[in-house]
Every structure is written in structure tokens, then in C-alpha cells.
Length: 445
Ligand code: AMP
Image (spheres, rainbow, N blue to C red):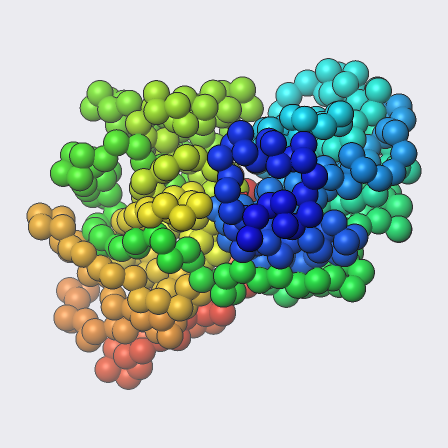
């Protein structure tokens, strides 16, 4: 199969030839003809599957071939994405595909001045990539009109809900013409996403190019167990031992990112960090330098977990496991993209056993453990398996403490706080891991 047999026009075929795309990926093979035929889509596609071209190519073709010329402050196709980095990346891909077409494309997102964006929108754009918050700001300030809108794309829809954008999406949805084509892309499908799809899509074609919630099988995944306080030391040890060249590292919190970057830089290691507290320009610069291999280690919160396409990234390290198991899939999806192989290593301490178990249950696999000599944890990480069980071995009797301790651990709201580890393992040696909470959560990193 070729892109020509999918019905793409010559100016697009020329762009693809220049980019070296020879064969459509499975998501492209299914999405392109359907979008060209005007269908709504509900597509489950992992990152790295080529989904951007899957929606952008037919969308550009429809814009070039059909519909009226764009008028002032109007937009004919809208691609909503969860993060600023993704907006830049998707727009860059669109720009390359549209090189030979007479279409105006643009990207808007928060964290930068709104005025240049308002100026640019004055003459109208055919295709706009946007984050939800800034799009609404522009709409409310009358810099944008949706009366010409013919297609809406929701990219990384699950992430948009995770980041707390459901209200913004509802407001945008109310402002759009009812008659339009809608394409929804999501790496994972929670019940909330299905609800959103039910409201927004009209008789959609469902595309699923990978089994639900299974991480890319091109990524070799393993776990090293370690005591929490020794994680930085283990990271540096593994880095030197494995002669790591380019690594994307995920930490749980903004402070965690800053602390690790500081520690690595203190050792003379070329590291930088990105998280939600940093200005957009600083974030983008760190990412660009990492992509250009000018930075060796990029440490990030989950703001960087979705959609970012870093060519040939060989390795992702989870310095901390994510609180939400689905984020694991997105994190490791940064490597092993477009058919190449990758590796994902998670440094796991005893506190994180429930998070590990939730990931194994979601991805339906027991992650291989590999102990590192000299780093075996004093606080053992109980065995886990893909059934979602944490297998507790009987504990040695503890010496009584003078005071304190014994409090319930706070592992985030998804933990069923009704269940507490038994005081006496002999009474109840196996504890079921709580059910993953799919509800919307607050905007985080
Ligand atoms: P995406 O999943 O859309 O982020 O795409 C992942 C990567 O695959 C990007 O670097 C694309 O440029 C690349 N890509 C997409 N489609 C193809 C194709 N048909 N052939 C080769 N590379 C592709």
C-alpha cells in the first residue's frame, strides 16, 4: 500500500517523499480514507504510531479541495492538544505536510503573550493548533470566530481530561457549529473518554491499532528496586555503567526535577529540567537543546510525558513511578517510536509498590526486576504481578518504636484508603491493589 493508493493528492505526496515516508502506518492506512470520506473518528492509537499524519494529511487535503476561503478571524479546522510543546510539535508536522498547499496554519498556546496571536488571527487561518485555555481566551476576546469551522480534532483527548480541561472542552464545544467533522484521538480509553466521544462524535468509525492499554512492545522495560534515598546515586551509577548518551528522566514533582538536575549538574553532568513552573521559553529551549543532543539528560514531570516526538530516543528512566498508571504508558512511549527499539527503566522503592502493581495490572505484564549489586534495598519492594496483587511476605517482628509512625500512607486519591496493610501478615498475606480511579483530576505538573 502507498500514500497515493489512499487517495492523497500530489502536493501532499511530494511533501511525504521529502520527509522520507514511504509506507502508511496502520493508523494512517485506516484513518486517511475515512477522514477523506467525511467520517467522524474515534481512534485509539499509541504515541509513535504516526497518528499526527493520520489526521493531518486528509484534513489538509479537505481544506485545500473543499470549503470557502477563510475570512477574518475565522478558522476552518481546529486541532486541540493538551500541552504547549505538543502544539508546537503538531504544528511543525502540519507545516511540513502543507508545504506545497496554499493554506495558512498557526499554533496558539498559553504562557506567551496573547497580542501577537491576536494579530496573526486577524486575517484568518485555515488550520489552527491550540491548547484549550488559550483558545477560549482568544474566543472570548473576539479574536476568533468558529462559524467557518468544518473539522475539530481532539488529540491526546485522555490527557486533556487528565489535565483538568473538561470544562474548557465543554465551553469550546458549545461555541462550535453543530454540523462539523470530529476526530478524537486518545492513547487510552477511559469511561470518561467514551462519554466525551458519545457527546461529540456522530456515528464514528472506531480505529484501534494497538490492544487497549498495552505499552509499545518495541520498548524493553525493567525495574531496579532501591531505597528511596539512594535513587540519585543509583541513577548516576547506572548512567555511568551503561554509558547512557541521551536519557529522558521522569520525576514526580517539580521539586524532584529541580533537585535531580542540581545534583547531576553538580557532578558535571550535562542535565536540564522541564516542568510546569518554568516559563514556556525556557521549557522549549531545554527541549530543543535535548532534541539537538546538546543536553544529555532531560528531567521532566509528566508535562513532558505525552506526544513529544524525540527522534531515536534510546532510553526513558522513571526516577519516580507516576501516580496515575496510564502515565507510565505515555512516558515510555517517548522511546521505541516509529518502529525503533527503546528501553525504559524504572527505579522503584518500597513506597511505590502499589504504583508498580497498578502499572503491571494496566499493561498486563509483570515487569522484569533486575537488582543492582550494592544497591539492594534495605526496605524490600514486595513482589507484584499483573493480576494486581502485592504479595507480602511475612515480616520479621519489629522492635517497638518510642513514638509516632503507624500512620496511613498517602499514595494519592486513587488509593482505596479503606484498605490498610494488615498489622499481622499471617492474618491476610495478600492485599488487593485498589481500583484505578478514572475520574478527572486537577491540573498537575
Ligand atoms: P506520531 O505518532 O504522529 O507522533 O509520529 C511518530 C513519528 O513517526 C514522527 O517522527 C513522524 O514523523 C514519523 N512518521 C509518521 N508516519 C510515518 C511514515 N508513514 N513513515 C515514516 N515515518 C513516519
